[in-house]
Length: 117
Image (tube, one colour):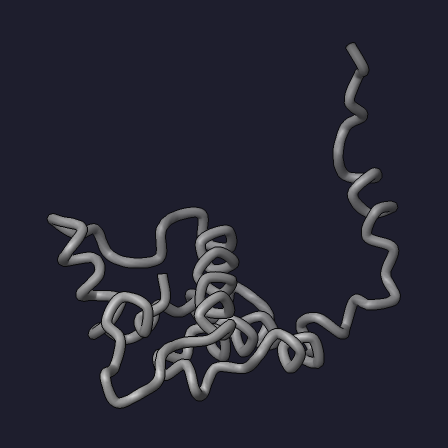
């Protein structure tokens, strides 16, 4: 959950779709590193406090492309007003560099066939 949804700022008028951009970034980060990206917490409240107060999690350095690192960093801007909208994310090199690739052929090549039952 995005920081602004956990601890809304009374001086702002709420949150918008960019809260979901935070969730996208957290989900992609977790898939990339294979574990929940925040340190273990003693309680749910401690975990929520970390989301709101600690620096956002980052990808390990030099394990992923710079384009992917940049994409995740932009998604995980704590201040939602600095976070891009989805339409802007679609212009990032991490997304655009593979627009012409046939992903279904790639997946078909790397995954074993599934037998029908």
